[in-house]
Length: 108
Image (tube, rainbow, N blue to C red; front, side, top):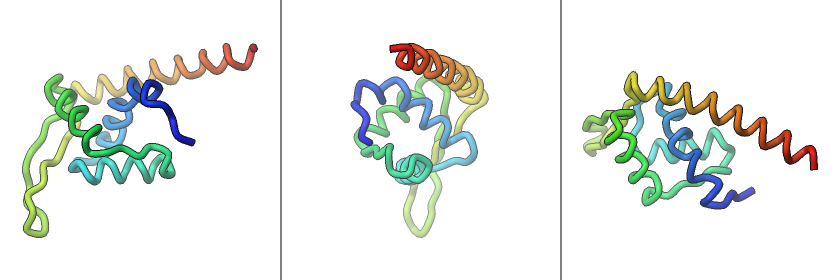
């Protein structure tokens, strides 16, 4: 199932933080990990991902560093302590919101 951009907009930064919670990754690997974890439901373009990464980095939720791998320089992203706290808070908020939306929809 494909989701509308409006529906995904608020949750995409949370999904990115979730992927980076366990390991540092570069852009393409973040996209692939989202696809794998969602069984190809969340397919994101680089044009969508990089503005999110830059915004999260600007908010100090992520940091980045360059590393050479197989002769190519790649920019890796790392979730900061502030990012971990934000992730935990937003995850709890999202789960609560989702449960309450489900209650309302099931009532109809």
